Length: 252
Image (cartoon, rainbow, N blue to C red; front, side, top):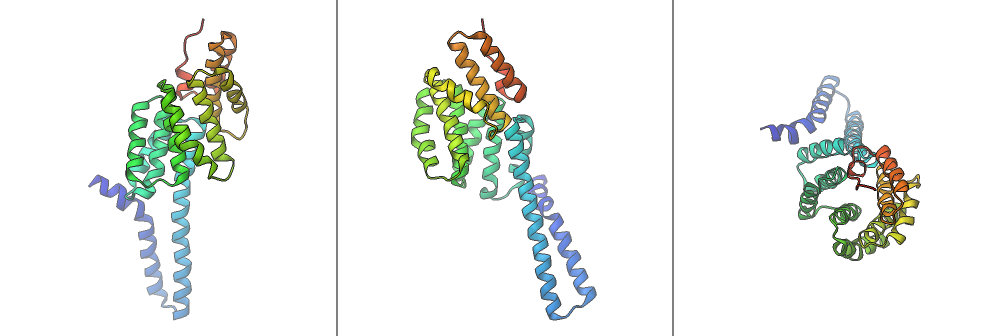
């Protein structure tokens, strides 16, 4: 019963009430045929605007939380949206958001389970497939699976970004490649890429925080512990709720 209320009654209560009010107004005013048509079109526009605004607000809140690294907020809001939605097509993007939230706070098992569910529902559009793939790659890197991360990049992320327009996919691919190189131990190649990303104003605080985090680990690998500590501090300042702030390797 509670699920029915959250997925059917609560999301559609406002448009149903508005429709009843419109029908009452229509009956009370008894307009002409042309007026009825015009009122119907206007009311339809109001309902469509309300639905679109509600959907955009949900996506905007989740996108903002992911960008700033508010992992706890993202997990809570995305899980709520997943529970509310009846259809796979509208639920799938919020499964990706939920996986990102789990990944950002270092809960990799939960993130992997959510990504598996999103893929099983087969409702992700290409852009969301790319975001899901980069999230899975980040998990593989943290788990030390360099071969798996490289295979995922070569098989899916790299080719997918070549088919997409705009800077967003390219930036995602660059971050993924930098992580792959780090996982493979190629710190000399990865470090400049993370340095560049950490100062890129087009990227959100969470992405820049992880760039600082990996730049710090690269610095630590070459023995520059002072720089590593500064970069770890930068990561913690930008995204304190993520594992970039909490999972710092010990330094000498």
